[in-house]
Image (cartoon, rainbow over all chains, first blue to last red; front, side):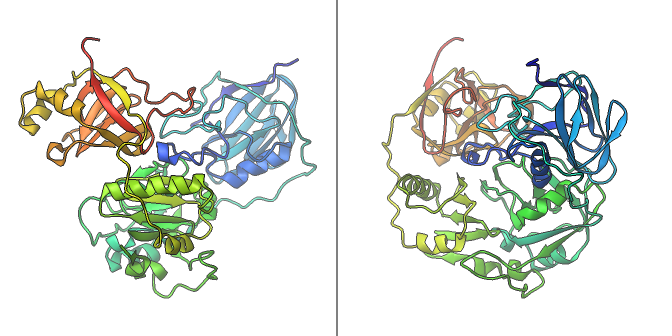
Amino acid sequence: MTDRALCVVRAGALTTVQDEGRPGHALLGVPRSGALDAPASRLANRLVGNPADAATLETTLNGCALRSRCAVTVAVTGAPCAVTVDGRPAAWGAPVRVPAGARLEVGPAVRGVRSYVGVAGGIAVEPVLGSRATDLLSGLGPAPLTDGTVLPLGAETGVHARVDTAPQPGPPAALVLRILPGPRADWFTPAALRTLSTRAYRVSTASNRIGLRTEGPPLERAVPGELPSEGMVLGAVQVPPDGRPVVFLADHPTTGGYPVVAVVEETDLASAAQAPPGTPLRFVPVGRRGVSGAAARPAPGPLGRLSAAPGQHSNTT
Amino acid sequence: MRTLEVGSRALLVEFDSPTEAQALHAELLRRRADGELPAVREIVPAARTVLLDGLDDPRGLAARMRSWRIPPLSTRAGDAIEIPVRYDGPDLAEVAQLWGVPVGQVPRIHSEAEFRVAFCGFAPGFGYLTGLAERYAVPRRATPRTSVPAGSVALAGSYTGVYPRSSPGGWQLIGTTQAALWDHARVPAALLSPGSRVRFVPVEGR
């Protein structure tokens, strides 16, 4: 009875294998990738007794269905959804025992976008550069699941958590993304910086694992022309020629040539991953923390330090 | 050297010239190997910048960096990686016209240049290679191709690049190579990394 594997019965709109991603390879053009709602993926692992970095499944909007070839413990976290085992209701956000041959149905997201399926032992596909994550931008890692895919499972290493349910933040009805200064804030007009921090945006349907695209007032550039390619961080708010901010998520390109006006706090990106298209969105400037021991400060201007762009720069040589 | 803050955990160091950025990148790698650099998750060189991401105190590092003496880039460090090329790209004639030379001169000019990987990006294993003189800079194609075959040797601006896998692209295609630019079963997976020296060697036939 060594057939530890899951068969994909219904792959869903987009279900991928995810873990903590591939940090450290950006200089080779390799995106970080990894679960978009990292806390939800880690919780799913904790509930089934896996290490935090074990590979889980990330579904998109309409869940997935799996048939297990062995008896296994699973936990579904992230976007709330109906969970059934052979048609019988089971718990969301808690460990669930799935008998060998049973069908686990992860239903459509009731709210939010992405649910995570943690499986005891973890999804044991072949790692690439130390990670099993599917990277949609560069095509690294396993392809998105299709019906009939067989996913090998690792050996169970831990004991599943003894909980009935685990508290999780609900998906955002309105998304608030805290922003810090980006390197090219001074490429935008003061009016554009005010627009970014005061006006309402919406999450665009064009959003994906690469970026959260927005609809709303365009940001006007103060500096025309092309920016030579430069390194991009997770959470960078890049502004393409149409002026609509794009927030870079896990599969973002490692370098880019459009100016970055701001950077979203990394802890806010999980809620960005759970905001469906149409969700109202605001960018809120916050004081800088953890830099040279400086404590959080209220922002002095409409954009805080963003509006003080020249002050960010230190000319030396 | 100009330092720009990128959120609370990263620093972008900007220079006027690509060579200065490459020299800082080499110095950062040396300091990291010697344990003289604070913990950093990513060091990403680019056209005129180096990004340091995942720092605890970017502002403190920026302040200390200003007192560094950065040695100029060594031109003869390490052996050059040789990439065999068949100069048979569909844009060869257009590039020759842009350069104002006969088509037959393009392979000679290109293969006589000494290249260096300034930075990577676009796709895993795609390097932006500098080394062609500025007068050989060419514009990107007005309409990008929807599919550029893997192994295509291409020009844009004064950069040369080799497509590691088939993808859309707007660079001018001058040749093809059988070299595996990216193979994740190989260590290292990328044939080229920032700082690598490269020569293109013309080959005949298939």
